[in-house]
Length: 314
Image (cartoon, rainbow, N blue to C red; front, top):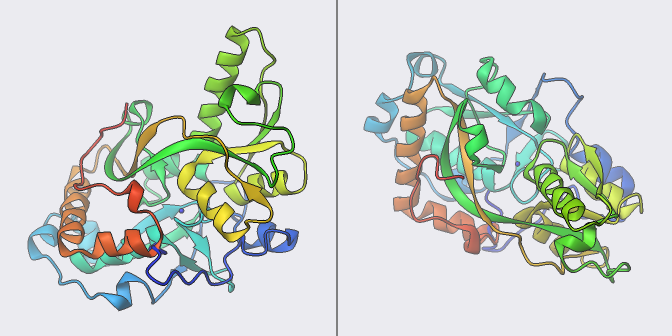
């Protein structure tokens, strides 16, 4: 998982800016380890939090659970290797991106701090349900299969597609072209699940299965493509488009998205107060115009929503 919306889009050395620099890609974004534990990080003082000052909404803040009112902090789980949604600044501590900016804006409306904690994507829902985090801002797709344990406040739409090396040396244009190819994904992400669906389609068509390479974070999956270990990376279109924008001589996306899916903020099912408070805050951010400004800043206008619906994923 930040409001890099292209208003003057200052892409400050993001982790993939030197896409040809292995050291930057692999060390700048990786979660600290493969365990569910997280590393506390800070969000930038820029973006929405400095460009726009939103007024606290007393009604929305009153909905917050007592524990959060008392602590003044919302513990946010995030896999910080997914630009433009969330990525580390050059100090490997400050979180930038659309989700970071949105968290700052939501915090202003609710009168609390959104404290981003970096952890691996595949441990986030478990961490939410274990009480280690209050919610997540990390570009997670709202899927019916996830709604059994968490509720989603949807805030974007995105499609799934794949990225290849510049020049598309293996001429991969359609998802069925991935049959028999080696494909890198972030473990447990939508890209990971999508590759399983593609493999099923390949098998049904009598073709070879996709050779899936799962990694603990998105930057490692991108590095596998860059180094030639993978033929493609499957992920949400919003992050792959950003990879191409920041490293146009290294990558390209020729395939069209496989479909449009809602991106949501997951909150534990047993915490409806927090869900309703965040939904109310998101509605306030949208109505203020800040949400649209953030979409522009991070070049996500095509992915924007007009409201903050709950559990629209299928």
